[in-house]
Length: 269
Ligand SMILES: Nc1nc2c(ncn2[C@@H]2O[C@H](COP(=O)(O)OP(=O)(O)O)[C@@H](O)[C@H]2O)c(=O)[nH]1
Ligand SMILES: [Mg+2]
Image 1 (cartoon, protein in one colour):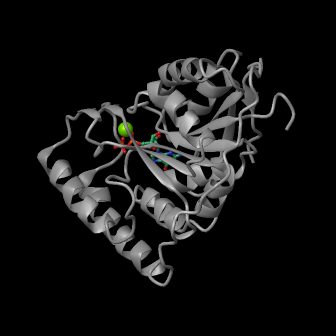
Image 2: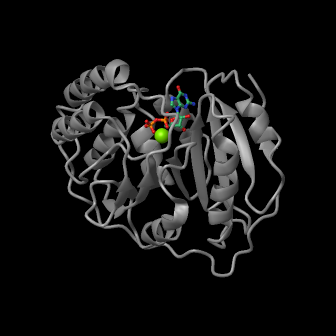
């Protein structure tokens, strides 16, 4: 591995996020710079019309480069998949453009991955999580029912929908490459596939704040998410959950300098 190879790549799916993204990039890049290893932020846009791309291309240079990719297929899941499959980093994961999950646990995430976790899953169901929720009663009840439905597909974590998940690169590729669900339930398919390849999922607590401006409409996306879980369950029905495989622990290069670098910009297709 060359000294400037990216260790942790954070994919941020973004659809019309020109307002929420600038602060997120500042906070996320600062948190990644603190890790002391080469990191990158990869924003994946689906034809936003509000200047989201310009926010990324105009980001100042700094110790953590930012790159911009485009995804032709609409949907958060497909955007994250594009970023994951384009990543050469040792570890890759994603967070939301509103940074609803505080990035202060990224150090813990990195340590767990280095110690051999295949995937680290932020979960609002973890007893130590701190959650500030302003969701409607309908969305909260829906979330409880959704967790029940998901239990048939994903066994190893109490909650699948928090936008804060990180993987060893090969585990991410195996789990994302066959993804068919591009909507808000894509996490269920990704974690379901990861478990079925023997991945060891580690659930961690998060500090989560409900940031206004969500694109998730309980009326519009809620039912669709239940239908998607039923489809995912059917798709994965023949694949048994594999026992978690013991994995060798890989060491991070000690004292690796963080790369300098300007914002790197992908080409619009
Ligand atoms: N690229 C892309 N990102 C999306 C799409 N839909 C949602 N997102 C992103 O998914 C993340 C979570 O969306 P958000 O509206 O905050 O939903 P919620 O927090 O789950 O209610 C944000 O980063 C959004 O920009 C999409 O169609 N394409
Ligand atoms: Mg949000």
